[in-house]
Image (cartoon, rainbow, N blue to C red; front, side, top):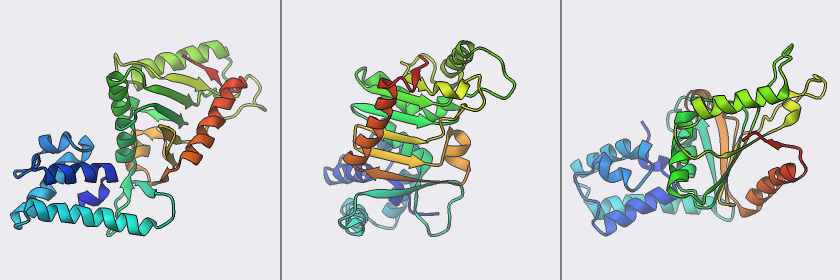
Length: 263
């Protein structure tokens, strides 16, 4: 099993380092203590690893140095390139320390401060996938969240477009979004439910943009399988330029009435 510390983001590693340095974090390392510092889904593994280091006579200062070494290695490896992380779903390859899709997505949602743009094709078991985002939206009522999702019309389906959108909205609210939480704005491509098969299309992109600087582009759908089990590949890139290009593209689709709001 790979070192769980290398699976953490720079922000999470720095949070642990600061807590060790100030002695707010001391043995015994518990999941509860770590959950207050880092992504909750990683807290148990990290606590177990820190306790193992402590059993091997690593004191806080030494663990602090281990974490700083990981951060230094990352920084030296990046050089002049923009910060890019390889993110994968599926089986963990021996000796490879890529970031996990589900962990990265939850981490991005958890740290959002101003805006979140989610573009996705398929959503399934969304109440789990979007739990961290819904919680963050409740914590910050000013957080601006927009979804661009695919609403599909199957062949031979003659249901009116209005009813298809209404059914999708009901299904999303009741099954794909955490119950009782503030809803995001949801947009769709009207061509996807066109009566004319020749112009029908899919909103097939899968990406997330956070706070105009943090971008994640992936093959993974917003499903439990896509986030955790399927073999998927994505890139997380810290780039204001790329984030602006992506968000401007979808904002232009809204202003040009090329996508429409479902709810």
